[in-house]
Length: 486
Image (cartoon, rainbow, N blue to C red; front, top):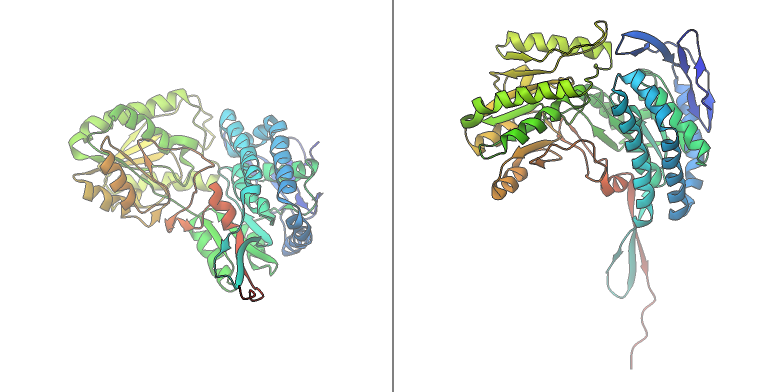
């Protein structure tokens, strides 16, 4: 039974979740939560303060010592129970998330199930986390321990709310930390419900806390709090830079997953039909609202004129067969529109596939491919975060690598070729945290995920995320001298 507070016809107020209970205190001055499909207001989150953050952090700090002292199997059982509890409420959670994000209902349900998988995956991983012994000779016994940081602040974006919260919270609490999560003020509901579901699943009060509000009010208070020992942030470069500046004064460890402008390279020996289909999906999935979207499609010049019509056909087929949702916020809708206009002004050729059957008031952007693009253009350098891709021709392998790396970002990348030597050679040279060969992967849990350059640092996902949420402690014991042997 949810504790979300009704506030008038069709409206709702989202409280905080602190120390195992809903906290319905705070002003309602956060921006409106809207349904992006209709552009209509549907509620607000309560606006937290530094006092709410302090209460949440104290609760997390108090809970953390006991939580970390549970055995690996005990913590594992709790996380697996939470995964099951999320799945039990998956349909309800998908309804909330689809309404706030504008995602198609099926896509929202997939995101909820992926959130559950994070808790299942890391619940299963906990017993495998261990230190190592170090040989220092017979006079010493030496070993390492993996120890939790303590309280981890988690600040998440609006494009995949529960998935992003689970992506950081699951490995963090699996490793023995507790968390204080600040969801986006535009999509707070499912993250609040995560706290409620965790309590019902048997996680101790204070292990998962949620404080709503804006970045300046709540996010900065989390970063500044002296009992927060690490922060994981996913979002824009500008906000990541602001968090880094605040964290620097405390020497606070960060994991930053920021923007992307990933290159998807198509060589002349590629399967062009397959490459076109997957390239379309690679920048249109989630209506382009993915940091790792393959938005720069680099095509070898000898196949350029053959590939572009295939790409446009694939874009149209995708738009016709999939419910293309809107972008999630009004500000993002305006930004994408401005970038489309600026790209045309720079001389790029706009190729648009109109969307049919959508509410004209909604925040819908038609799938768009720009051709005649030089990599120095704004549309090739700046993250759009909408259903927009660019095609850039190249001549040689070396030029493809040069163009791919001529970016401030380095989150993901891909290449298409039948030449195995080239595949490994180019994958090695691309400056990004992930490289896909003859595919463009959607969400995965097993692969470590994170960026180079302005795309951030630290890694989420995979076993490596568990290590990123722990300190290494070295322990050495001097042993009594061995008696002389006869």
